[in-house]
Amino acid sequence: MAIEIERPLRVMLIDDNIIDLKINNKIILISKLFDDIIQFQSGEDALNYFSDHANEPDKMPHLILLDIQMPEMDGFEFLENYKRFSPQLKDSCLVAMLSSTLDFGDIHKAEANPYVIKLLKKPLIPSELEIIFNANFKIID
Image 1 (tube, rainbow, N blue to C red):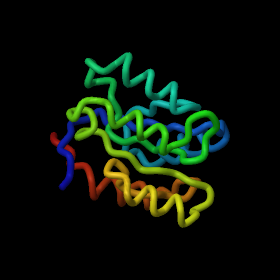
Image 2: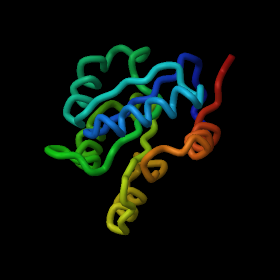
Image 3: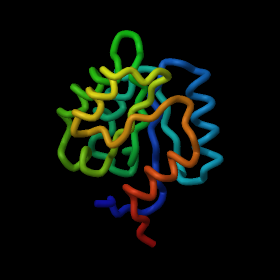
Image 4: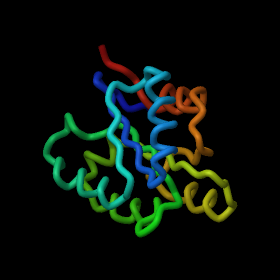
């Protein structure tokens, strides 16, 4: 079932690789699907953002694009912490995981996670982003 949302739409990129952040940021801008992009180079910084802005729904992302392989806190560890946030936040914010290598262990782990809607190969492909967008979001005018 699609989430009904009003613009502006926000996406959060979490990736330790600055080059991947720049490439994916550009792809998102070109797609014109989202109005705001929030970026972090670590899962911990992203979790701090959620904690700091927990009572500000207008600052929360509607979609998180989460890298799997990161030092200190990988994407799956991020999700372990993310599940502690309010149901309202989790119900209005979807997660797609990103990986430069799609190994079977990551695929099974991502598919088993209730918060993950899709595992995507890096870099993002605009048509895949559009498919995720159209399948999961309904814009309210």
